[in-house]
Length: 304
Image (cartoon, rainbow, N blue to C red; front, side, top):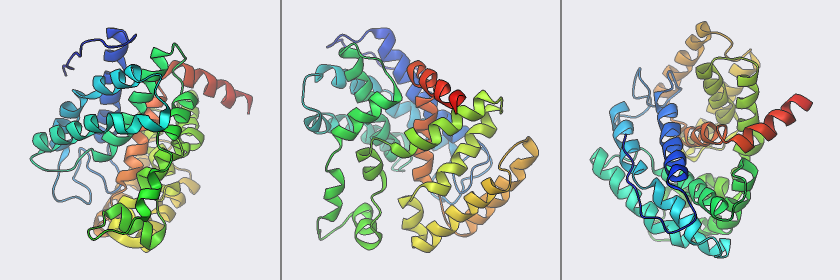
């Protein structure tokens, strides 16, 4: 995949821009190619989806990755701007990303959640690099949280044509992707990231470690994608199924993949797709490959 090169407007180096843009693209590809996944599009089937396939995700990832350098440059260009004003500066980039996605997929929403989350993460990285500060998961989390303060309040607004997010908040109190961003992705920072790294340190194969981390996210995330399809009952069922798999040993060898396949069939029957957890898995994969993050977390894990 070839990434477009944007004229430098900051202290960013070309290598930094290419590296983090490519890493974000690889994170999306790592998630969609992970197989099998409960209720999600993978190499075996389209999960609980009837309007999208694996090829759509590949086309989408390639299309929106062309915009990733713009997020990094924006973070650097507005490095002195108060963080609460930064979100509005990158919204046009996000809109351009969505337009490229829909053009590539002929109208299918494959990566809208990832555009939002990766856009925030890359903007934070651009700011850190421009300020000559270490790029670490905790530092990114703080910046994203401050950027997004107040965005869940928008879910409370009464509208003639409420969004799915507004409906779910007003019905069930679920804040979804906005709440995760406003928290600085604490579910990833405090739960899935150290969990994933610990498995890798212990020698578990990459695929199994990532799949088991997906189960952990599914068991703990109030996924609005699931609630939108199955209500609170569907969300509760999916979280319990994922937790039961973890409680019974999780995934220790390739033969255990049959457990995931059975879970996948049940998700398809119930029309449930944990897309929100998939988005958080992408962030987990991405943040796990930041040197400062992994060094600090590995030290923390080894001391426990």
